[in-house]
Amino acid sequence: MNIITVTAGREIGRGFAVRAQLHTQPAEDPFIRQVRLPLRQGRRLACLENSSGMAGPAGFRFRDTLSEGKIMHVDDLVTAEDQRSRGCGSPLFNWPVKHAATQDCAGLHLDSGVRRFAAYRFYCARQMHNSAHHFSLGLDEHS
Image: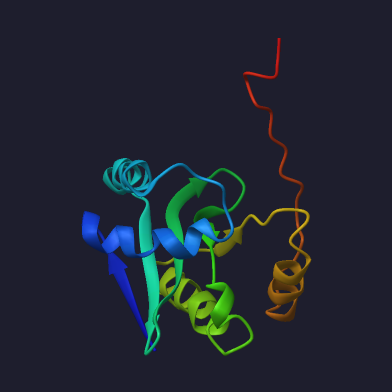
């Protein structure tokens, strides 16, 4: 297994099929554009590859917060459906943790959907704490 950070369109596109298993999104080209703009704004994409190919992408960025200082925020961490429970999730999770430590981060934050019970168990098994509620409001829904 190997973790690579990706920045080019072709490399980014390789993570599209895995991410599409979990998230509804349009087509590959808009996904690549969606990733490229944040790359210029500091977001990064790390991908786990194994003998089967792309096993999972993890999108992350560094933020400075008033409450904790510098943190790494994992925007998205997805393991391919056919790779789950095969030892791929741990390296994909461990890489950002180790990388955050090398970047002098005070912590690592990660959002997970409230209905993703398997993901919740996975993160709790890695000593992550459910330390906050994340609220969202679609502005097209708000009048």
